[in-house]
Amino acid sequence: MNTKKDQPAGTPKDTHYAKLRRAHRDQKRQADKSADDPTVKLYGLHTVREAILNPARQKWRLLVTRNALPRLQLEDAVLAGLKVDMVEPKAIAELLDGEAVHQGALLEAMPLKPEPLSRLSATRLILILDQVTDPHNVGAIIRSAVAFGAGALITTNRHSPTESGVLAKAASGALEHIHHITVRNLADAIEELKEIGFQTIGLDSDGPEQLEDTFAEQRIALVLGAEGKGLRQKTRMTVDALARLDVPGTIRSLNVSNATAISLYAAHRHLSSDG
Image 1 (cartoon, one colour):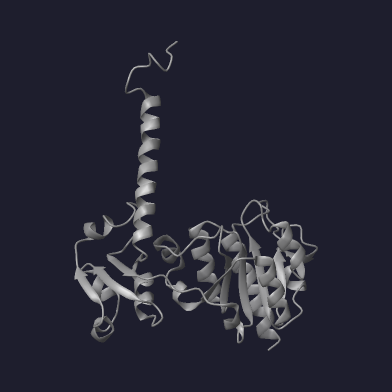
Image 2 (cartoon, helix red, strand yellow):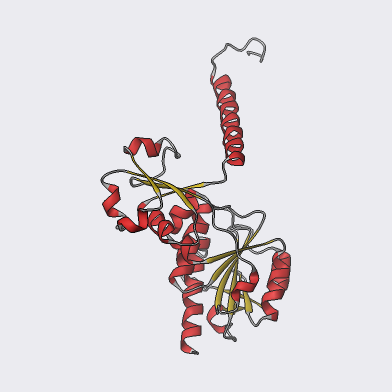
């Protein structure tokens, strides 16, 4: 049996470790680049269009193909203050992950600034995520939140994805239409929401009541946790109520973004029926 010393160069084991070392170097270069460049690269037609139309978004440069430009459906006046570079699709692909579906449009912009809790004065429905880390899930959740009229998304400073092209693409433009509030301590934020009149309801597969039977107030804050571990114990102890979604099929659990959409629909129905 070969030992590490006499193992021939170029074996699968050597190749495996070489790949790990390259991946580590690539991650470090990306982290160093991110530290020097605070901008985000937003891509996809819906994402780019909504970001350009958002007056709160600082925009720097639009890279767009000739075929994609008319599909953005933006007037010349909207693009007047923006540097627009007409490029080939491969020029955009080189700036992104190889599997990113950019649709011929990429916008270099500054991330949106998180809002304070005080911006919730006129909001009746909000969404709170307890350490949901997957940017694809969070992007899909943002899209559902905007669709059902939620006024804000609250996440934690840590263990939550930062704004990125992946998250924005999954949100399909919805990122520009919701207040994103980040907090250091989620339990403290939930207590503050209670004080200003929100009923805080945590979604839990073992919740004692069905979600529809839990609604009791005219301001609702839905709290969802990460897939697998769910809500943290401190969060479970802080919310007003724990509720479940009854799933009649063979599979008893849902992806967190799907569970969020159903919960938002139920909360919207409650708030609409009660005026």
